[in-house]
Length: 195
Image 1: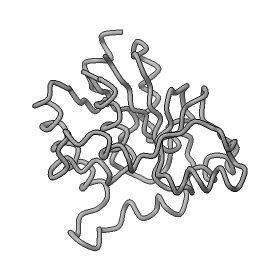
Image 2: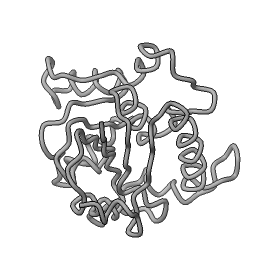
Image 3: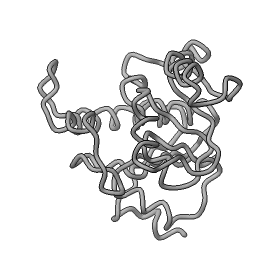
Image 4: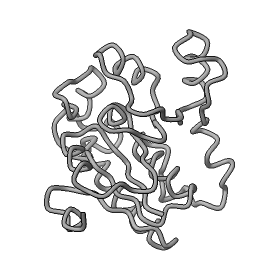
């Protein structure tokens, strides 16, 4: 089963050039670019950032976010109290067969989305909009949280983008050992020729 993970970088537009996958997961503001089945985010500020900037997720995605963020959105009336949503913090509890030592799936929203795709039965995961540069979303907007992406991390001195690239490579190995391919789609990707 083929999944697409839509991150908010400008290269998310490449998603429009490939055949529709079986399932689509939007990550943060990436859910505002194309219709999605699920919307993954870790910080409740993502909700405000999307809606305050006149955007909204495309389609009717089910939320996948920390339980605290979901509860806050329900409590403040931003989503209906009976709105479906999955607690991202419980995903590993419900799937302990997945290793967590190297596969640090809780670190970023995209890694939660990749893990979620894998436990949903994905055999192929393509990520779009994972640019690892700049701070603007696909539509040129930015927020205060994005500005931190260019600063060295306080623990290891790497920038956010370097840390994400390193984790992505590790995730490719871990998923590959389980028969799941993980591809970062760029303008030079061969999958763009398979449309």
